[in-house]
Length: 499
Image (tube, rainbow, N blue to C red; front, side, top):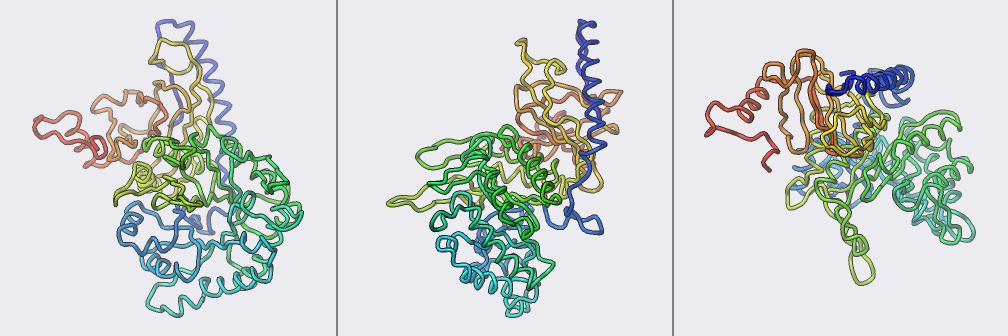
């Protein structure tokens, strides 16, 4: 799946000019891909080429897994990783997770110790946690009937750039660096193979605080300012994976600059020695966020934004994301609760965001990047227009990943106005999925939707499309029954089409 072609127009001179421009841009992009885009970041895979941890994770409390309804939904979605605090009240859920093959990345909070810079207290807390939940830990010895899944990844978190308020004139970056050093000493002193996930500042170009923001009076630091500060205080040596919380509120991730932030993280780490694997331990799209933000996005938008965020993260080699949350959250305030509608599940059912994550896990359990077709380039006049209005606002994202069973899956969407274009595909049939066609629908030369020269016409919009080379006889039969049944009384919808 290597090229994008414009529909033939009546004005051949205009088409020739546009085609020449497009050919140049496609050629330049292919050179970039060959040099940099397909080289995966260090630490993503083990010596056998397997991912060291699933890209797809869930941020929750392990105790959520002790609820059979939630456990069934989490398993049905396909999550094999959760990020959770590790403490006594979460242990029943940690054990349930282990019984069901769900790994826990353990969260260790520093903020409460940082208020008074009680480093001895924090050291004692970390010391006990790694010996309870790590390899050979007492939790696994106490429950020998449970397949041990010790914590391999330790998250030193708490959005410290905004929530950590150390005493005196000390700023959050300095305080966090001191706590990180303690955590490193205790965790690595017990388990040298353990990985420390550090930083966790919140904010993007599309949300507050902005990356460079610093308020010394309120002790608030944006993501870039905080990370640079921790590094200035020696923190680069004390962690293995770098983490941010790139919430973008009502904006999709790529519009809010997630790609640029990932690039910045890689460059910042290289300045201090080498790239480190990137995590997003909190990322999601709330439908509502309390009285000041009664509406962020629709359920369908949240699903589309989630899929776009995951695809963009996979394109840039992010190691893992733990998505928010199992359910909607109610954060206590004085006299009331702040409603945060992040939940992937509601009323014992999957919301659209959970369904699209399930689809991505099914189609691309290990989405290794194979090709960058377009990295947000503005296609402009190269698009076949479905409107008579002149526009050039159609930045295109299109990437091909390794899918299940050695298939290839191309994911594509636009940040701007929709358009039609033709995509070159391999073979004589492919399957297309989106959040309204979760069961997939077949394009083929046999039914005329794939041209003789291997092109399909794709409507590109803000709804991500997934085009897979894996096509089964069952999927072909379901497509015939949906698009051209021999008897209309036996018509059946594709899964998702009539939800």
